[in-house]
Image (tube, rainbow, N blue to C red):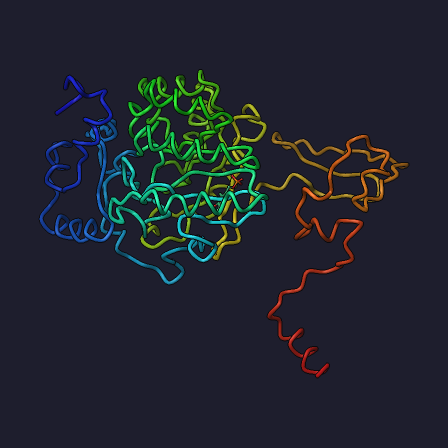
Length: 423
Ligand SMILES: *Cc1c(COP(=O)(O)O)cnc(C)c1O
């Protein structure tokens, strides 16, 4: 089994030859784990299964395999068995924000729809480790229909994000069926697919698949490259096929200790991505999922990387660095600070080179009062107010038409005392 095998570029062959055992892994990589380590590794994969395509494993540089970024993402380590106090099985509370099985509805206008429990490779840093291999079960069509029905009955959902598992592990005809059903819902404007196949199984991007996706435009696809070593000629070919089909491509990386926690590696990665028409979208701080402590970096490492990207390379090569808030708070962007100070008519900023500069603000700006009555507004865009959700968060405090002046935690002792006194 190797790159010269006649079916190497056949994705089904790759799947059929997925490495799932330690002995197979040793054979493919030409390494032998010491007996004690081997025992711990077996325990690890009994908890979090092992799966990797021969293609992805072939990218490992065996001379220094223990430090290889591909090896570290694909091959288990006993550290995964360590569970820290701050770690959670479902840190993003995806299951609590799930109105029906398979759907997570967290943001006002979009939903996450898990349509597959299968991946070509089980990333060691997976945030959904609790579901990995669970246990290689694709939801039944009846279960999918429940999700589709939920979306159909919620007109506010204009963006559906297919994820899993990996949606592109589904057969073309099943994917076609799901996309057809979703497309038939008038309020679904955009369908997004999250898939790591361009990275771990680029041969999955066949002409047949691309033709299915093309039928259901607009489709956006986000993939998951973490290291420049993953951008191979085969991956580039897969990306080109998707881009040529008019599918806008994005990339979501995870900041991983010992894999890509380096500004130079990240700059090289994002530059290679844009060269392949992939827009770096998010850089994630590693989640608080169980068994990931050895992958986590301080947030400062991410800030340092952002400091090295913003201004230093093309703006569209710079992802947004986000922390996905534990408990289901969603993605929170974090950035270096560029706004240094301000007065009533001046803002003081610093740029990436260290220049400190002044932006003079207008003295005679008249803000337009907004009561959401677009009919009487001097701005020409006439919006149907009914289309929008009610305002939340800081946007609510900033608005002219909502009377709220503070956001107060519901469970504060001070508020509890007030209620007591009112009684
Ligand atoms: C990330 C995510 C989305 C999509 O968020 P965007 O910021 O629009 O990419 C939607 N739902 C859930 C539950 C998510 O975790």
